[in-house]
Image (cartoon, rainbow, N blue to C red; front, side, top):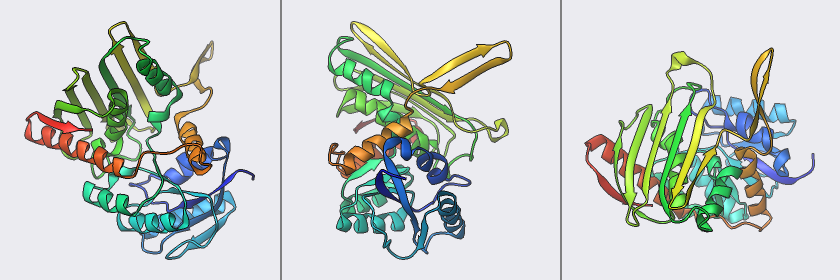
Length: 319
């Protein structure tokens, strides 16, 4: 298999979650990347080591269970948490390895501060933010194709899948929406009111920036009894003084209807492949990601949203 060599570092997930096998690895080739090994530290739980073992066997690559990886690679896709994530960040920085980081904000703000101090080039795994439809919409906003931006709304509903994250859906999936909102508004001070509980399966917020752009979002996970997995709804609306844009983040796809029924088939580049392609560009030196400290800014915004939801009071934050 040809392509830019990458190490798959760790296979830590929530519950049955295995993003290395189900999300990242299947799309590496399409993005011009090639796995050379799977590595895991021995300090993670047995189930994470078992997932790493199965992944290596399935890909036909070497498995390393060691304090630090020995295999040579040009970058690393990282599914680790906490102390193991921070330790790998130090290793990757010393080795000059850019990393793609799965689920950054499942670590809290203090852990992310320690991570940012240790990390070099980091591409967060927030793939909805590089969806081709959304990046085109951002260009329209930046080019004033819809006039002055006045409102941004983002909705995300995911199926029961692996079940509610232990840290709640705000830091698990809601972070994708906050990332979309702040990309649309740019750096901003936001006055907002949020609703939900610290470990809720649903969160909403309504706010306004100091430049009078209204921002709103809703994120939720269906009940476990509903079954299924994946994104059920992912939509962003951008409203300007001279027009509006609607982006369906669950597409591109083709809606096929025949006498046998209806099917929605993938068509074109999905957002995960788009993010991996951006990671490949980072490794090749064609893209410079935001500094790792940006994850701390994002995490502090999530803390502010959670505090507003918990207290029932509005708050002002910066993103």
